[in-house]
Image 1 (cartoon, rainbow, N blue to C red):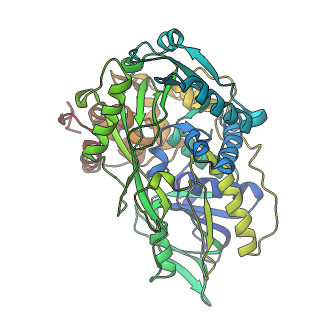
Image 2: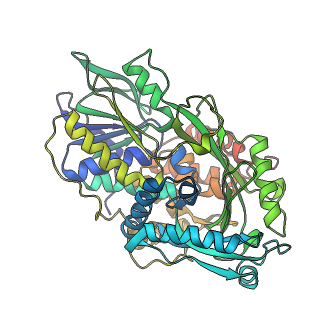
Image 3: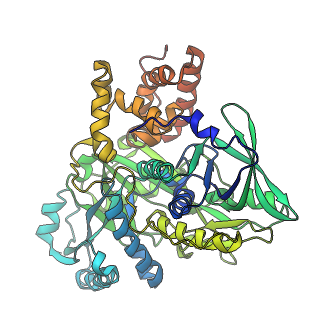
Length: 533
């Protein structure tokens, strides 16, 4: 695989006379999906992300590719059918990152087995040919065999069903690579400062290269606002008096050691005290437990988990696991924001707001896509570009993403080797490691990530900072925040060597990362052993 050089990509936007067919603002799941759809159809496409790809909500999910059992219970059959179809496509097109996961619902009521089996049979039927496996009732003994740490008192049995499980920010990085392979120009750390207007119509964007400070005027036939919880910021650039379109809702997850639920199955608690579902899902040899749904009045690039959210997850997990987790057991805690429709009337019931996506076209022609979820990113991209064709009078080219493999996709995957996330790049990564014996060393004894992965992240995956590497290329920050802090000086030194940066830059990077990582810790912060860089 060829190096992806930022300087070469930037050359692609250097001609101010160029007019792009599609300008996408936002480098999360939604924006990447739209840019990939546009580029695959043959449109001249550029995407700008103000920070790193999937920096926001798109790296902070429950790691599920799913139809949404809860949405079925709410009667949103259309959304579930669409999501189950997209789940099947994603399992096929990104087979190195998406896998079939079995979920067990424990039954503590005598009627639970029949009730959930009937409901989940409907879930299976909606998936049709793309079903991942039939749901079935299992005995109490079978539940205990598969989840030995389940609370046994009052347990009648359980129901097994199948859904998808994945690595969210790794998929985002691969989508960015796929966009480039399809001819798109994709840039992180490029912030849109304002919209270009011509005769009252949106005609492009003014962007700032956050690394150099250079400003670019980018002309386009269509501009797509795919900025998630930040959509209102761009909408106000278009119409300063516009009322908010979204209100963020926060979802929090904690990471525990796998010993709390050692096994291959995930756990699904169908109804918590607040009426939500709670998942405990094996992920990268750890356990992700969540989530919450807390309405917020403001958005942030680094949302913080509230104390009551952490306690809610710990208390709920303690009711179902024989080994009750406590604060000292939490390796990392992370929060993500969902861009929900701004509520009318009762604002508290965010869990009842539909997660289906919406496309809005402003009077100026600015296209805004909001809502949805990771599972449906491809369909959201398709619908958005269909709209862009009409708004921008573009050629009516057909969608091509249904059968388009994502960069790295391969059918045979060894999930026991942590390098599986690189898919077809794994061989090249291992080849690179042989160039320097030191690159084969681990970054930390508690996690499997190696130094060569840092070098690879810079050369091939557009990583620019210590946080880019430790949060979204390797998932250290999300798996063990203290271990990630300990790795930071080593990662900074490797990055400095690749990016030709000095010792001051290294120190600034380490300090900036530690400042962020402290927000993922529940235990007292411990300085990394080697702070001198």
